[in-house]
Image (cartoon, rainbow, N blue to C red; front, side, top):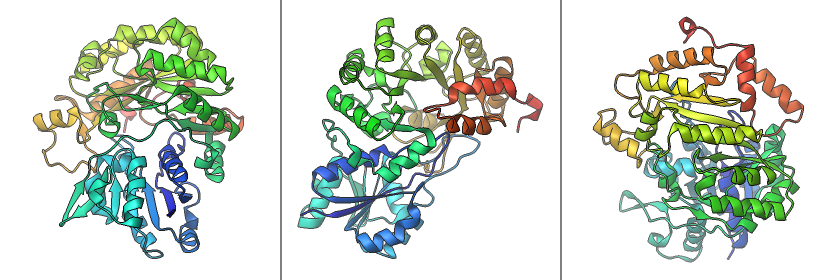
Length: 469
């Protein structure tokens, strides 16, 4: 028997751009193919219709997706889960339907968030198998212990069932991205998103991808990805971001995806996260022909010593060669850095800056401190170093800074780098950035705008160190 399901995207993060709730689209596809009736509401668009929709639709289950816990910025520490309890209470004023939490943010802290919000259930990890199995048990009876990834109460305790991989062989269609919600995100940046694989076999010390999706890569069929890209194009996207933790986890995977896009003659610009190792001229040429315009390198450091302690398994020379390959093809590319993690010192920061001067036509976006998450190698190190207690409540953001470093000292150093090189972006954007961003969007510029940040930095230079907050 089909059920009526209301899906709610609780994400309210809009910096630098609002991001379409792709996880709910995958849940929608699973529910749609299972014959269920689904409606959506989005915190950034039409949550004002919540009470009306609950009364009119009378959902039998309400699913809430939480994408982010916080902004992972050591100074701002904006939290995005704090409205969940009030949302659960508001839903219960209108319907008695079970409330199910899910999403990547929830899956990092499933027990804590279920207890905090008093929701009925949660699904940790990939949600497609779990939501279908849960609906079957709720409708027909059965054992909750058989529901993959289910977070539920048993004998006064919260327990979590083992998770199960979701299906990756089905393309999302326009039916899985409600048109009025998709239009909201397209109006913001002309951008939608897709995923070509799940899991990550790399072991970066701070990263939650292996915790959330598993430590092995499971790849979607190339023709499925190309068909989904066509669907995004039909829906009006001018730019697509591939959200894989690392798109180039396999040269063969990248090649097959790009060849499928070319066979279908998809005409969309796209960007992705790339690991700055293993790239070749031929591979980047193929990617550019298939539509690649923007590369976001998860570099983390420009110093070999720090890269080793971060468990990145590449060196700066790999970073330099990858950057040069991108520059030669006139691709927009940037590097994300995490400053102050394990093994960092003022000397390694300085070495990283000197190395960065070899990079041309790039943007370098640096944050201070590593957000500590449970289940990661960084968590174990933070406990061993006495940064946190073994039973620390990490729902409230906690950050690792290497012994001998302070956040203010690192910010001061980064601002020094930014004054010497406009490629370095540290701290809040320059005053003119927001105005420039709005002007570019009005002119129809789609996709990421970080390539304009060095220009902004030259026009509105970073304040002197004495003016640092």
